[in-house]
Image 1 (cartoon, rainbow, N blue to C red):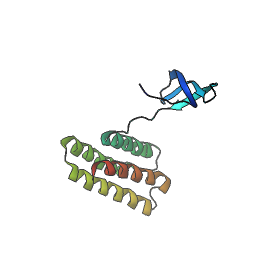
Image 2: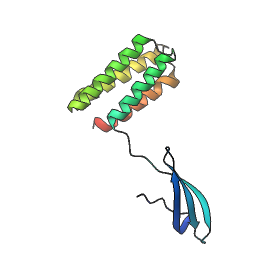
Image 3: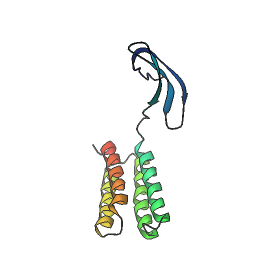
Image 4: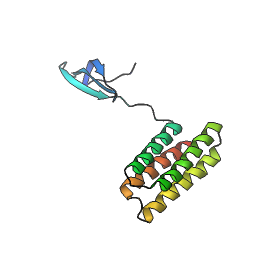
Length: 136
């Protein structure tokens, strides 16, 4: 169960939830009036492994779209798969080094004009999010 809160009143009622974790229902205001309400329930943060899988999918998409060539995509994905393997083994030090190598390679592709910043920076940001979870 999750407390969805109210619009200042005592009660709220939910009637449905969709696959985006959006809940619909009614909520009371401080004057007792009921209003239709849409809540978005925050999902738990993704695990480092899940985040890496998302990055792999993004890179595969960039290869499919022709933004990256197969060699570039395979080199990046290979690093990410190695990160997954190291995470599975509990070896965090190599994970941190591989994440740095990955972000360096993506930045190099951006700097060389082979990867648009709008496509590359999110990859770097996502890798840095994994680093913040695993490399304390």
